[in-house]
Length: 179
Image 1 (cartoon, one colour):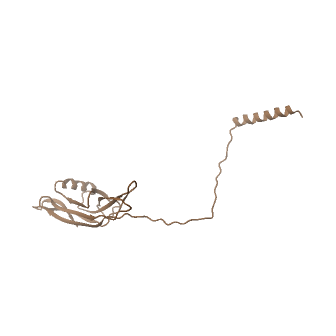
Image 2 (cartoon, rainbow, N blue to C red):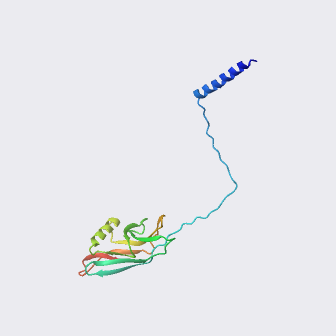
Image 3 (cartoon, helix red, strand yellow):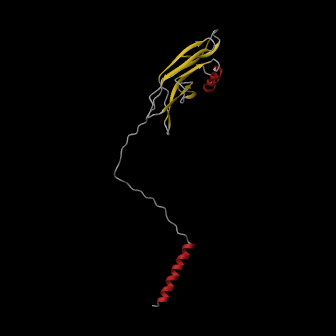
């Protein structure tokens, strides 16, 4: 056999394959792969709760110039892993309401519901938040902020009812009372 003829035939076949590859693109069928392994592991998951304020109490007083005042006081909970704790006063109109609504941030360990100079504003806020009802349930949430990390909120611990009331020197001033 002639070697040059074999070389030409091989070159023509390779060229034909190249032309066919360009003219007819290759298709690859999709496949799925899976495997199993005989080892298993078990784990227990826990949900942590952050401490709520403690010793929450509500006291009522009557100011001659400002009307009735309901004051919520509390003590700081234990810090969690060095968290910085701030507080938020929350409330809801009905016990069946699923979520607490923010009333105010509280910089210290006390918050007063009363009229005085800002009472009209507070009353307006309560009316907007709670629909003008005569009584709400209030609580205090501890907001734990971790250095360089997340912010976690507690649930309200002890809760109290706060209602609209009249009082003052002539009993004509609007305010709030506990209970």
